[in-house]
Image 1 (tube, rainbow, N blue to C red):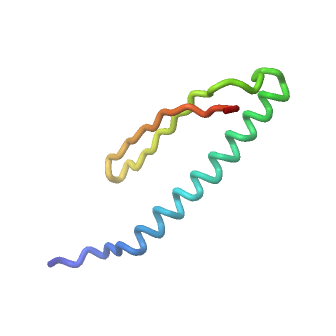
Image 2 (cartoon, one colour):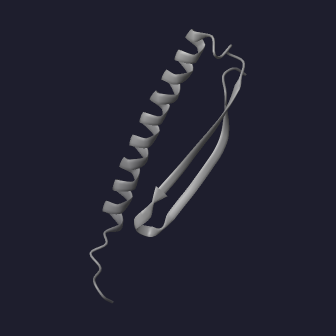
Image 3 (cartoon, rainbow, N blue to C red):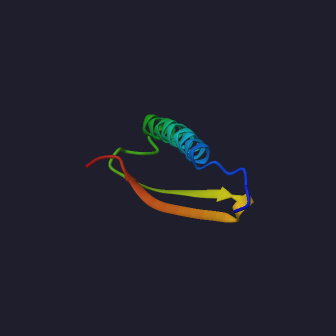
Length: 74
């Protein structure tokens, strides 16, 4: 078997690190935008917000889209 230099453990750690960065930063930005919109009156607080994310990894020709809603109240 040819040696590729690929290390599954390193790869998994790097993917997890990337996804953690995406998650933490995305949450902070969404929270900031919602609080600003509530403060300005653009949102009332009972809305459901459409949200979408597109993940792109050009090196492996990956484009993956997630669409969902975020409720501001139960």
